[in-house]
Length: 115
Image (cartoon, rainbow, N blue to C red; front, side):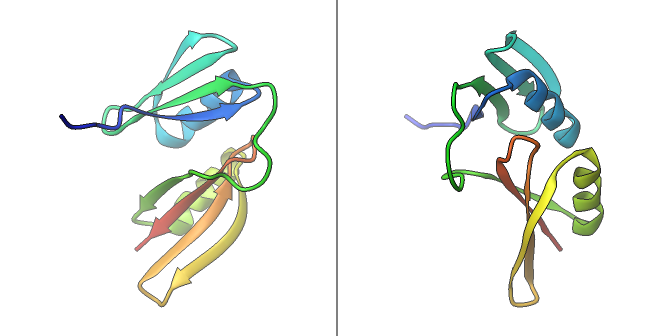
């Protein structure tokens, strides 16, 4: 028996709005399974993203976050900030591995690596 990743689910207070934002960010298709409660982003080349309503946000840093790679990291960071993300930090391991930490409009952290 083997497991496969089907979906990554994000807790949030407004799944409809956050799913719309992420659909633009990752070029996915919105599927409001239960509008206002659970919204799915269909991605043809990876696990789907789910957004489920919870009454209170998780305090502090995310325990799990999404990591993305972009050939042009700076252009992708600028695009996402233009959509409403907030840059919260930059890190590297030497010159060969760099990444930018961002947060989506609901404050969920995610990273863009480049190179």
